Every structure is written in C-alpha cells, then in structure tokens.
Length: 145
Image (cartoon, rainbow, N blue to C red; front, side, top):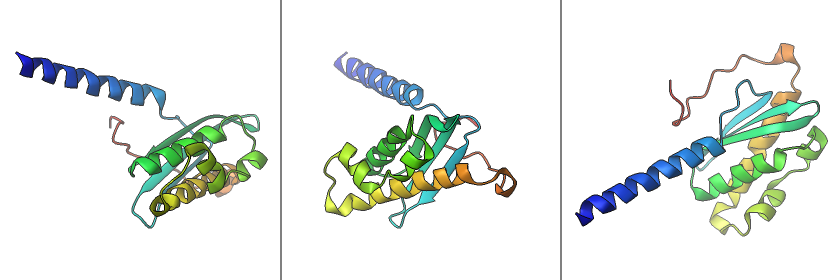
C-alpha cells in the first residue's frame, strides 16, 4: 500500500511541475526577434522577443543546459520585458549575474551565453524585414509536433 502511495505522490508532483513549467513559459507565436545560440560548453539557449510599439511585450526562453544556464537565460528574458532596444543593449552578463546571484567560477560562461543570446535576439528584431531569412520552428521537447 505504501508503495502505491509513494508512486502516486511522485506522479502528482511530476505532473504539477510539468504544468507549472509549461504554462509559466508559453511559446511565443511569431516572435519579432529570436536567437538560438550554442555555447562552447555545448549548452543551447534560445530567447524570443515580442514587441508592442518600441518595447518588449513578452519574452520566452529555452535551454537544454544545466540549472545555471536555465537561471541565466530566464533572468535575461525577464530583464528584457517592458524595455526598449536602447535599454536592452545595456543588459550584459553583469546585469544578469546581479539577478541570478553568485555563480561558480566554472559557470560564469552561462551568464555570458545568456547575454549573447539576448543581444542576438535584439539584432534579429532590428534586422530590416527584407534581409531576414525565413525561420524554421524550433522543435522544443515540450512542443507537440
């Protein structure tokens, strides 16, 4: 009986975690600026930006990296919200580390990778429409299809 209770609790916890993660970080359809960068460490980060007027209305992030990578890219995406491009250009790895807190020396590159990814998403947004190449949808593990 105790084994069934433990398995049941684990299933509920995993399902709750998945639902919170999925609904707290929805995919942005037709982002105005997007960047996907693979770091030297092998971690991949992606940031999508949706603008309303000249300010970021919404941002979305994804990474396949470690917990430090996730913290850094999440901080970069959060910092981008409600900012214009001039303010976005001022976000750097130090700004990201101020939000995340102390990172081990072996993971400082995570903040740098998040900065690069955010800045490339801004570059993509600022790219004239005629110079943009068509985007292929990124197949995130949590997306269907």
